[in-house]
Length: 470
Image (tube, rainbow, N blue to C red; front, side, top):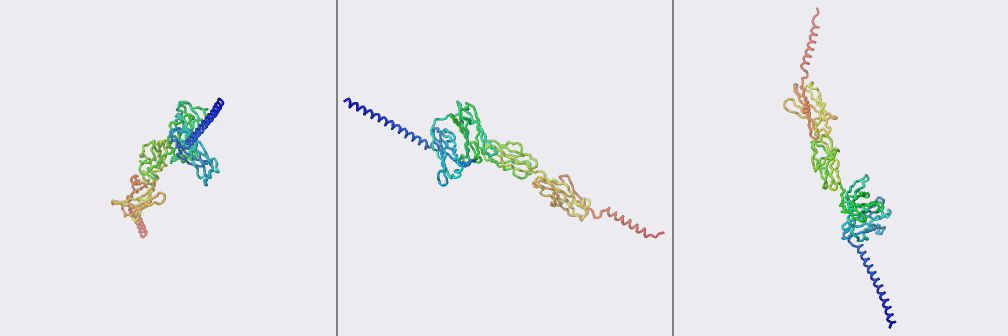
């Protein structure tokens, strides 16, 4: 009896051990399955989505695919991996590249760019299409807010590259390090066209801590396709902090300014309207006249008391993001001065005009701004009627017209009127000159008396010669 009982106990013990192993094995398998499906669920979850992407071949000849993802879930996510698969014209895979997003931890509703590169020039030339997918990520703890971008400025160098320089501050309660600054650059369609990032400090992590309230500078660069960029967004994270808040879209597009007045022409007034349009809201407007310092204005205005001559004007405007735009240079002329009349002469001279003579009048007329439009000769014979004759340009600046012949004793008065192309006129009377002459007989009185005297003298001489000599 004791022997049977002992054997039964041994058998029961083996059975219990076997059941325990079965339970442990079942638990392991169940845990593995749950873990597998958890990972699969994380990899295929819709908590992270690709918003947009683009591609280009860089200056080194490598094929770049870049874009942007967003956390649309309720929990923080980290270690997001993006894979780009490259295909040739036959649909064959010619390469792949897997990279993590630029920011490691992505809080809900936040975005981060990514960049994958196929570093093979020969294969890059064969790529005709590609596919982008999120292959993995995992949920993580919340990263507290502790970084703030307190300033940033843009500039363009001689190569056309866009530089962003700014400062980031630790606003948290403890020191931080390994700060990553990220700039995402967009085109006018809000597609990512370039991305740049820098790790601060650039030395080994944790060798240079940023204490609470301390600041550090950063510089980011867009040099691959800067001509496509219309705005950018800045983001940052450190090993223990996220940024507050994410930088809003930074507009880097200058406003477009079109000058409606003045136009490229000549004005006959000294007060010229300045009117223009601006493509967007502005924080400041002004204009530069003849290359001088800017004059601040609130909108359309009038430029007063302009001197005669050629002038230039450029209109400037800052948009609400601080980008300055400039209009094209407008060239215009102000001409309020009439022509100048000089060197007036007549043929025959005023004391030798005979009844059968037509009088030719010459004058030099100049206008340095808009030019001479016409010159007229007006004359009267004293009967109250004025005759107008258009003068003809001979050569250079000399103008000519002819006054008809008048009978003996006629008093003739004439004046010259000059008009420029801006309708500014001047007369010789306004210049203080009066021109007149009297038509003399063909033989003036003193000439007749001289002839009579000569004839009388000749007659006396002849008479005396005929007298008989005694």
